[in-house]
Amino acid sequence: MIYEPTTAEPTLRQRRVAEEIVSGTETTAKDLLVKVGYSELTARAKSAEVLNSGGVKRALADLGMSEDVAAGVVREIMTNKDAPPSARLTATDQTFKVHGTYAPIKTESVSLEIDLGELETLRGMADTMADRMRATEVNIEPRTKPEDNAPSVV
Image 1 (cartoon, helix red, strand yellow):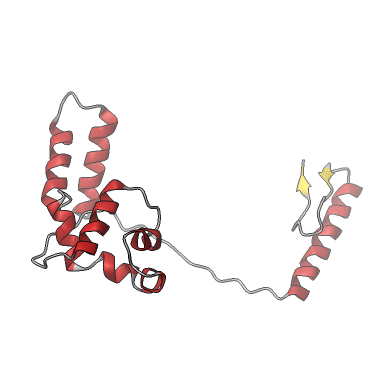
Image 2 (cartoon, helix red, strand yellow):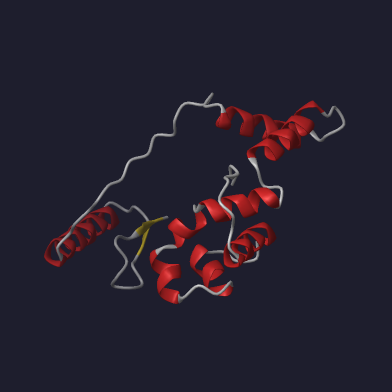
C-alpha cells in the first residue's frame, strides 16, 4: 500500500497507527486501531476514515512509505541486473499496475436465493439421478451426511 504525503500534522495516535502498519503485526484495520488506543466502536465504524486520514498518510510518509520512495525501490530492482529475475518481474508488474498498463480485472457478483423447499426438491432430484446412474452401473459413492448437496462420482 503506497501513501501520498499530505501537509496534515499527525496526532500521536495517528503516528502509532502508521508505526503499526509499517510493522505489519496486525491483520485487520479494526485490530490495529484498537491496539493503538481507538475504541471498539471507532475501530469498527470508522477504520477506513482513520486509515485514510491526512495525519496517518503524513506519518506513513515520514516513515518512508511514500510513492516516491516506493517508485525508487521498484526502479532500483528493475534496473539491477544482479537481482533475481522473479524480483525484477514483480517490480515490472507493479509498475504496469501503477501506470494502468493492464486491462481492468473483470469481476461479477451473483446473488442466489433458494428457499428450503426448493433445496429439498433439488436434493431429491440429485438422489433420483444417483439411483439412475447406479442402475446403469456407474460407480457412485453414497452421501455420508444429509447436508451434502449431491453424491460424489468416482
